[in-house]
Amino acid sequence: MGMNDATVPFITLPNWIKAAGYCGFNINPIFSRYGVEADLLHLEDARIHVSTLNQLMAACVDAANTTGRGHHFPFILGETFTFEYLPEMETYINTSSSLRDAAKVLTWVHELISPFVDIQLEEDARSARMVLVYPPIGGLNDGSMANLPYTSESFFATLLKFTRMLVGQNTAIRLLRFRHPPPSYAHLYEEFFQVPVAFNQERDVMELDQELLDRPLLGAYPDLHQQAELLVQQRLARQPLWHGTAAQLHRLYQTNDALLAQTLEHIADRLNMHPRTLQRHLSQEGTSFGELQTEARLRAAVDALQHRRENLESLSERLGFSDRRSFTRAFKRWTGVSPSQYRHSLR
Amino acid sequence: MSEPERAATPENHQIVPRKDLDFQFDQVPKYWFGGDPFKTRFFDAMSMLFPEGEKFFIECVRDYRDQVSDPVMQEHIRDFIFQEGQHGMVHTRFNDRLKKQGIEVDAITQKNKEILAAYRRRTPKWFTLSLTTGGEHMTAIMAHNFLHRPEIFAEADHRMRAMYYWHAIEEIEHKAVAFDVLQKIAGANYFQRIAGLLWETFLFPFHVFLVMRHMLQVDGQSSWKTWIKGFWWLYGPGGLYMKLLPHYLTFYLPGFHPWRFGRMDAMRHWLDVYDKDGDPIAAGDTVARTFS
Ligand SMILES: [Fe+2]
Ligand SMILES: [Fe+2]
Image 1: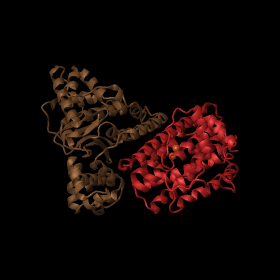
Image 2: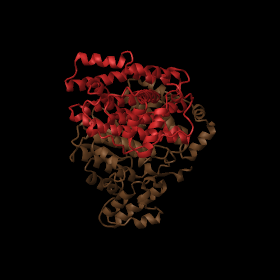
Image 3: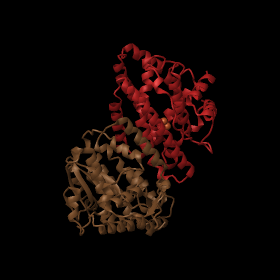
Image 4: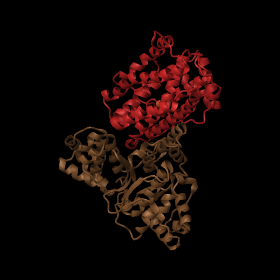
């Protein structure tokens, strides 16, 4: 499966129609131009090529620009987003007892809606951060989703909307950080988000007060919440599997920390493959062993720093970094701070 | 306990997704187990722990789902998750009734959730899967015994009995799913396999007793006499736990597989009645009549 064949779910199709209407254009001709079949009967199974999704987005941005209403399409797509066709997700969010509780949806969004973006929650004593991560799995890492500003724009619009809905309109979201340089329409950002914005950052991050995570929510409704989560679990189990070697490797690392320090040969053996076959598959999927390994190591590092008391020396060794320096460098590239700063900022 | 001698999940084994079952909880009396507060609250306490526990089991098995290439095993995992999801939802509905009796359902559920989340965060995936496998062994032995020893539920309200029988049937149907994933996909060794069950053997009853203590206090029934009598019912000769013990121990045999042990006749009987008219209460009643 080459990277151009990678498809992602398109259960959000009705949201696109709604956002287009809001922006003042008809999306029907755009859908036909790119061969998108709109069929509500099979919405749960609808899939779309990543490249098509990118083209669709660009076309919608252009169309919105010509209507004269002055809307930037990704902002509207994000802001008008609801889980209409995943009703138990909406119920789960609305019945949460805290923002932390609601944040569990983020991993499901990744699995059900947008495999090309994973949203991780990080926290220290003062701030909580929702970080957009672009996992190189299933041939989705050709960079298109990660490099366009549109993905982060619409994701943050949605995240802000739900956060404000849960914890209150005038919630102090501290800052939005974007990786991309300021676009030509940068002046629209603060007006739209109503939050300070920074460009050219290391990662795409929404920062808020840590205290907000555990603030009790008015809509808490524990039994419905519990039932909604079980329904989501049943839905997740019906999802088709992520095929491909990169996905397999990704899962293998997630379930087994001890493999992070293992060599390519060892891992290939574990997957019953010749090392060269493994490398070939990964490169066909647009990624590499080193890339996947580093990503998995850094995820494990963030996790360990948050939840364990391991010293940095042994952590960097356990994760398989050649030395403390290369660990620090990689970690800093990933989170923006060094491991010791990261740990220091925790309680 | 004797009868099947299989070293693996039977071929063509089906795990059937069932839904929309009605147990008429609104007609069940408060002390539904022979009017006995201790026995009733023993099952109610388990019922309180089930939905979060089942969610935990689902997540721990799902951790490995993407590594499974065998389509039959994939299907079993999907149906296992469906069944556990239904159990959780039905128990949540029952637990909602306990709230009206003054039981702190939400607070206890929240606590339970935090404990299980800590396991998910702090312990390796093989261990949480081992906990799941151990938990599934405990539910499976309860299931086999509840169905084949009708004296256990003889004094219970027949609608509640029907609910536990249904849960038992499905626990038997999917009893080897977590086990097979642990053995074949996670590649657990003997020690890793038994670690979860050992851990739970002490903690699970302890949690049940903590929840019961709260319940019996709310009921004004927490006297020494109640507890001593209750422990005798559980641990005395011929007590509930003692009845489960031989089957429990089979798990520690090298080469154990869930399908090597456990009678199946009551289950076939249940399926015959249920498949005819889809009434779990009638199916439960028939099993209870036939095997008494
Ligand atoms: Fe269950
Ligand atoms: Fe089960």
